[in-house]
Length: 217
Ligand code: GRF
Image (cartoon, rainbow, N blue to C red):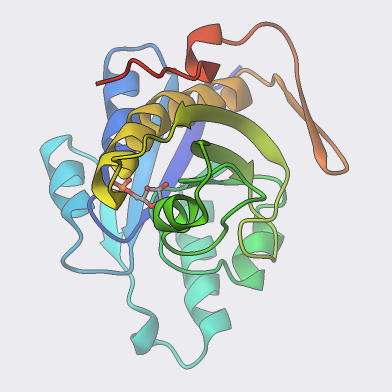
């Protein structure tokens, strides 16, 4: 079987992108990162791509006549490189139709809350303000909605009384960096099956990534 080629879409810091790079470089994740696309010329993700010899493109929406043209261009660049999975890693936009149609059930996103709770921006802050005792992160397939697609993996963390948005975000992020590469691994091994809203996973998954870990520093 030929190796899965993935394309990353990121708008900012790119720590999830880095966690994927690390897994690929250590050969625990056997995929090829073919391309980074960013909509933000100042994204730190670009520095990460440069450092690791990954091709990158800056594609700015304002240079296109329409939103559809912007997403068509992204889809074309990904297709050109025979990408089989599109990985949104802090891509701060709702994915447009031309990209969704080109990659049905082949676009993943990570969200910093336990969906369907607290979709949209600032999931960690929303959770904190609501007063939940447990939050976490979710990897899901992308559909037309805002963080509404079928859920692939979730990890939960405790929320402490003295948490700030920063401390909770940091705790969640550590789990993001575990579950995102794991979800990509499952996909690359053909172990994910979508049945309606439900995602079935064949075989065992690393149980460590699901733990609620109250002792995490
Ligand atoms: C993460 O919290 C992710 O869950 C959300 O955006 C943030 C991106 O962080 N979708 P990074 O750019 O991967 O560091």
